[in-house]
Image (tube, rainbow, N blue to C red; front, side, top):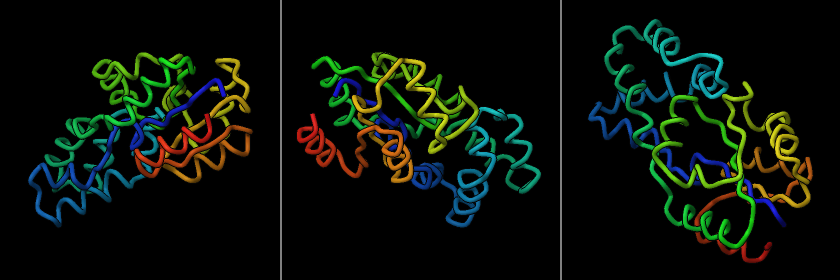
Length: 197
């Protein structure tokens, strides 16, 4: 194995939108509405794909729930603040890099949020490269995401291990020939890597 490919959300950066909404002080009913309106929406996926921006998303969400315009703006302005490092996995990534493995990223992510995280956290800058959904206008588990990573960096999938918290994403990677690990906990990930590498 030469290459380790990490998903970012909920593998390297924790993303808990319900906890984020609760932390903003909204009552339970408003938090629940905002969660479904924003985080479970098609527009959220379109942001990941990079085909709309926050201004467009805000206008769409505000049209659907005009009485929540202020709350919607707060969520869109601040949601990336809830993205915090999963330190055990970040240390693992850095250890793997030191051991000589090539590190790549393959993640569904909004352009604006990814750029903020990229500049904020050094571990997103020490890899050998990656493919982020907004860059290719599609989402995992679309085959194109994986194929783009392989072709861009001339990787052999049989020499490449992919780590993701989504079963569907890992399954698609395995169909292409990657080795795969479904992330469930930091300890399990470390144990799995010790067995596979």
